[in-house]
Image 1: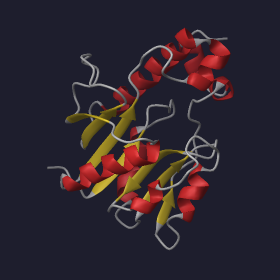
Image 2 (image 1 turned 60 degrees about the vertical axis):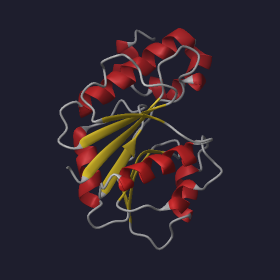
Image 3 (image 1 turned 120 degrees about the vertical axis):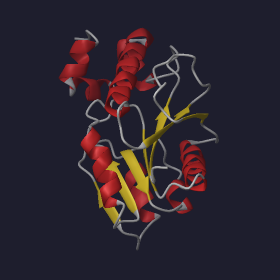
Image 4 (image 1 turned 180 degrees about the horizontal axis):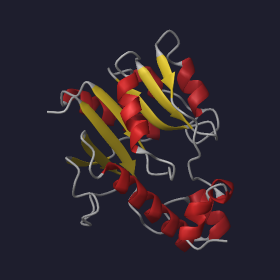
Length: 201
């Protein structure tokens, strides 16, 4: 078994349930279209990866074959994002994986080399973060369970990474390159390729 596991947190692409901040500006149908493109990008990056992949869906395991290449498909469990991520990591470590990196499906700039680098850096660091420009993170990697990192009260705000780092003072932390995840209209405007694909001016 591969010692490295990639966990993907994915929302089921249902109109009105994805990209709510973006939908305020462009409408729910276009927001859903954007989200489906983001999922497709994530799938393209991961589809021939040498590491095992587990997808944790928000509500149900879809009948769609888009994730057919992954080793595991699960449903997220918990009342907030922190609890859901903590439960997913715990599941992965209980499966026997030594290094786990978790990503979402909000990153048009996702590249295979970033995920590979996260596993490389976990050899000598306790935690790897991929920070976003809005104060959150697009990737979190662990080589052992650290519960405190998920016990913050600022999910969905610009203080997520800052408060997460406060929880792990004294641990060895590596920060990957900062990237732009797609949450609102300004993020989308900053991503010309995605806007063009979705035919959003």
